[in-house]
Length: 362
Image (cartoon, rainbow, N blue to C red):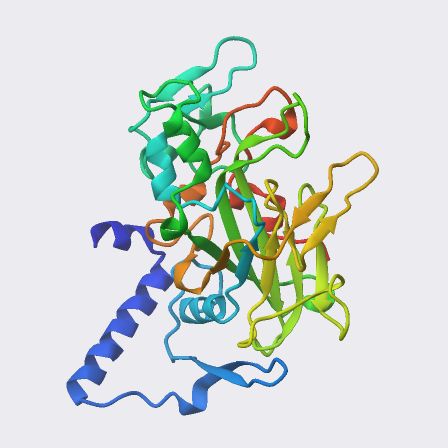
């Protein structure tokens, strides 16, 4: 409790105390507050169905992540549009839970001229130690810039061999450990001002080789996402952004009758369907071979593989400065995988240190 009180700004603290007082009064009086005149309805009407969800707009707003959006509305929006992900039939590297991943890595610091520094051994990395390191005038916690810290997956003894334990790390915890992280933000750019973006973030321990032969094109850790942009009425989907590689993603509108490649499709209850490309985990709205250019290896998505309904596995991250409880790892400023021989084989930085965290391309 003391930790939570220290974390809150005065305005947030006042709102929380007021909300608790109202709840106690309601309980003592044996009745429920009347929110009828101050409620917002979240609805979606895909062909043949009508789904309506009422999002209460209470007198007192709870906004622990200080982003200007009621946390209850964030949670309900994230659940309402939670995607269904269809993996390639040959995919072997599945999403991870960060709390499962951290005990399986060690933390190091990349030194430009000289050997890298070992900071934390396997078993010593957790959500607290991850953001508490300081070396070479850099801090591993919240930062305005990316830093030289990085995590490296280890073998069973904490070393650097590719043993069965490290292979298991690459493949993830399996279907029982899948997590879809979310981030809800207001849109404040141009004609989209007043809309909301719901980001669905998929974290992986490994992405597979895209190139055949001896060239290594894989890297430890992978951060992928889609963004569902909601109209000002917070019920209508404006467009959906399917992220792919380095700025190869694009915004899509709903599929036109007869089209299977130029628009997204939704489930019967109005939630988007995502096809995850083999190895790269790039997101697409349909199955098939995705040509990326003359010299770039094509992406491949397919039907018939594992289908993951993200709804039961939604976890809201909060904001970089004010993460949700248990999501403090969001502030980690280093890479989530080892440093590779070339740039594209190095592990990526976390979601809050990606350009798209605050601004997807319009």
